[in-house]
Each structure stands twice: as C-alpha cells, then as structure tokens.
Length: 240
Image (cartoon, rainbow, N blue to C red; front, side):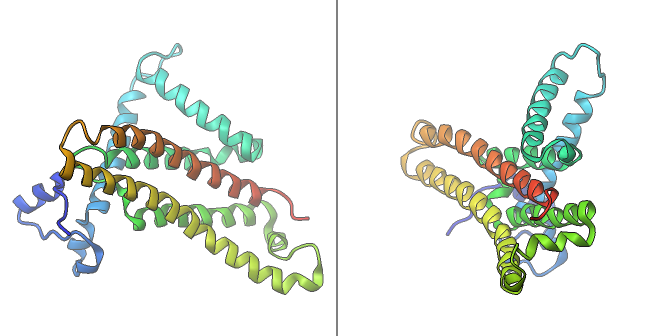
C-alpha cells in the first residue's frame, strides 16, 4: 500500500534524514524518533505549549479573547471530571485536561491534508492508555495504602484468589479497551477519507466523512476522558 504524503517526512527527506513509515522497518534510534506518529506527537505537544503561553501571557481579571475561550473549555472539563470522581479527585484534572486536549487535536489533525493524526497509530493510543491504567493504581495506593489490594479481592474471602486473577485480567483489558477503541475509530475514519479522496475527488466527495470525522473525533476524546475519570473514581472509592 502506498504511504500518504506527509509534509514533515518530505522536510526530513530534504534534510537527508532517514525516513521510514512503520515501526517494523525502523532499525536505528533516529529512524524510530522520526516515525510519523512520533514527530506529529511532538508537533502537537509543542503547539499546545506555545498556544497556552500565548494565551496566558497577559492574564486579566475580566477574561477576553483566547483567555476567555480557554477558561470556559477548561472549566467545563474540570467540572465534568469532578462530577465523576468527586471533589477529592479535583487534583487529577491536569492529567485529564492534558489527555483531553492532546487526543482531541490528534483526532482532528489527521483530517488536514499532509498531516498525520498520532491517534491513528496504536502505539500512541496504547501509550495514553498505559498512563491512565498505571496512574489509576498509583492513585489507589496513595489514597488507601496497602488496603488498596482489597479492590482486587472481592467480598467473599474464599473466592479471593479467583477474583484477584479476574480483576488483574480486567485491569489489563482496560489498556486494550482504551487503546483499540480510539485507534480503530480514528484509523478507520482516516482510511475511508483517503480512499474517497483517491476515488471520488479531492473536494466535494470527502466532505460528508470530514463532517462525520469532526463529530467522531470529539466523541472519541470524550469517551476516553470519561472512562479515565471512571477508573480514577473507582481507585478513590473504598472497597466493600
């Protein structure tokens, strides 16, 4: 299958850097860090940092412009997360907010010709999922100490060994659930969009899929944030 034209890859090729399109063909460290999903992940992170710096450069008591937009969006995400986790989970907002912005922009970036959406690669979505699941257990140990193990034991002591195994498998499955759901939806959307552009023209034919992509991209970011908040809430609550 022919690889799409990605402008960062073209730039790196002009600079004489080694370019490969998938991990299986990347043998050196330089080739691995120049993979599209890695370079565009860095592009999104740098863009977010610059955007935030420009927005908060002049914080005003009465917000306006970019500050006003950011305050509305951030407050909405925070209140939604607190509604799921409770007040004791408010300190988790920086992680949830960062994931929300990163995933949303990643989902939309793939719709721009010449760009690549990092969430269309399972390595990116798996990395986000691993962060969420690992941090879930960090929260549990922080709030409950060694008693956190009760979350894996169940209410009936003689079934505890079996329930423990089931719970461990379930928590590992969370990584698959979060990563595969996000990757599958975004990759499928970009694949359909690319096929329509090749077969039916560059402009009018792909428009319905692009409008649908705007909707599904936002929904998938929302679902990831919702499930992450629910996992955090489960780690915060006391085992019965």
